[in-house]
Amino acid sequence: MKERQEYWVFAYGSLMWDPGFPVAEAVGARLEGFARRFCLRSVVYRGTEEAPGLVLGLDADIAASCQGLALRVAAPDWPEALQGLRARELTTNAYEERLLAVTLQDGREVEAVAYVTRPDHVQYAGALKLEEQARIIAVARGGRGPNADYLFNTTLHLAQMGVEDIDLDALSRQVRCLIGPREDAGDDAENDAEPPA
Image 1 (cartoon, rainbow, N blue to C red):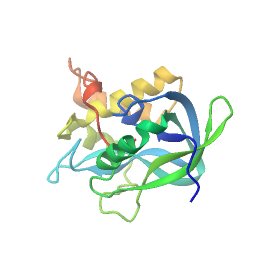
Image 2 (image 1 turned 90 degrees about the vertical axis):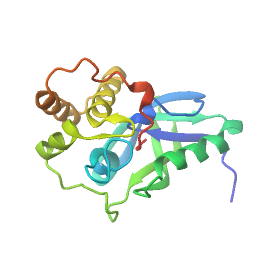
Image 3 (image 1 turned 135 degrees about the horizontal axis):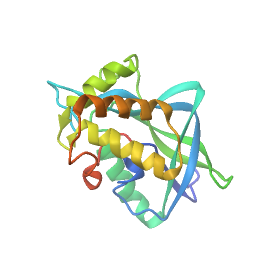
């Protein structure tokens, strides 16, 4: 197998603001055929086995595309970065590691490692309505803190990138209504080593 010359990771959730590895270059990127959705029950980072939360996944959808960040990793850093990613993203094997073609904001096309939701996994929750997602996220808490903070940090970083995600914005508004004002909401970005990417 030919050795790759460049190493990229496609980030669409917490990896955008907390990759956990040295980033040589970060570029806005689009992945076709997948949607960013709260479609995975979190039993470690943003929930527990007894009271699961919800986290984002790349959900296969031929009509969809996902805007995120492509993170380039320098070749000397790649083995350790990949090892860390696998430890983080494959904790319960609810994701599948794939090498997918993404289009960078500047027009380049690259292959990037991405973590795709497995619809056959017990944690998959792709059929939940927005209202049910909001009810779960508003109360769930796991090893990395409140589930709501994960949502709020994601919407904040997408907005800072100029990416509009109508569904996540609507979900965020519903969750804020359910939990009311909180002084600490969204303040734990540095602690969000949460799957998915």
